[in-house]
Image 1 (cartoon, one colour):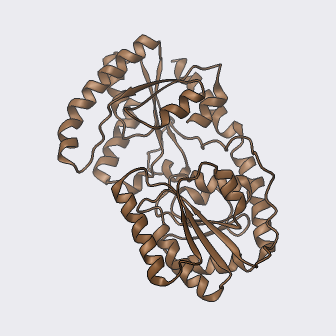
Image 2 (cartoon, one colour):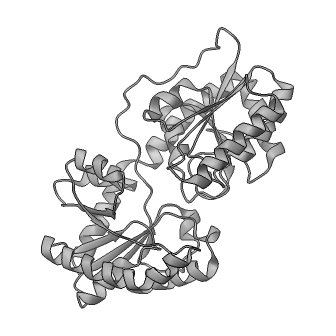
Image 3 (cartoon, rainbow, N blue to C red):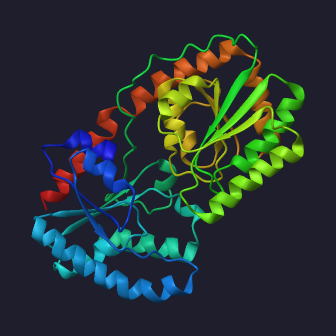
Length: 356
């Protein structure tokens, strides 16, 4: 959203409402946004959250309604369809506040009783429903208020487009850039790399990502590291922490891997294509819409480790193919995700909603 709204100022004024204590506040304030905080509570398996969810939804809806009235806001843009606070605020405003609901998760991968309820509410209570990909759009009924608006391209490049000549030591560097979260595919990439490495000892793999301060993510990374040690791959597989310079990381690699099990869009894949590094991604939703398989990247079946290993070996063995993919990917995303298809479309949507 920040990428999109940065391009729409000053014609439209945006203020952000974040969960209390969010680390995103400093980033947004550095860009000059007014930022508010509310103690949002999400549905989870924790009994305390379940008990608090209903009362806090009503309370935060009331707070959001008062905040919108005080700030003169006319649209509340929900950044995913599980956040129901905006609907409460709209109800309290007697329909004067308009709600735009953005769907960023792949609904098919969510618990269906919840996802179907959120879909029903979004289609009836929101002024517009924005889907980040056709993969997401297919979950909804045919409805003129539901449309696809792709996320915008990253900002201006700071480094030259990568050339990727053969390395002096003959190695091929693979990068897996994603937070350490179960389902993001690192546990699939590791056995795929191990199988590929058995055929090509020049391969090197580096994982980069954060754990978001969550114990379960820390344990997931520890398990990955233990698996590397058990396989005797410590010399060729490395682990890094959160990347502050994604462009630099991607342009330093020869191949980007993304074997997530479920992606509504995948900004990581978009970044890899935009920055010009060859990509192998799993067919898990949104990534299939970001490039043309066999022309600007390789798409492998979801959770198919053997296919992942074959794709790694195919691309690692052919430097010319990596170059062709990188160049074709850069061209493809610059055309498909041009402003007219992203933030300019979002601006037009806002104007239509405001005209009601």
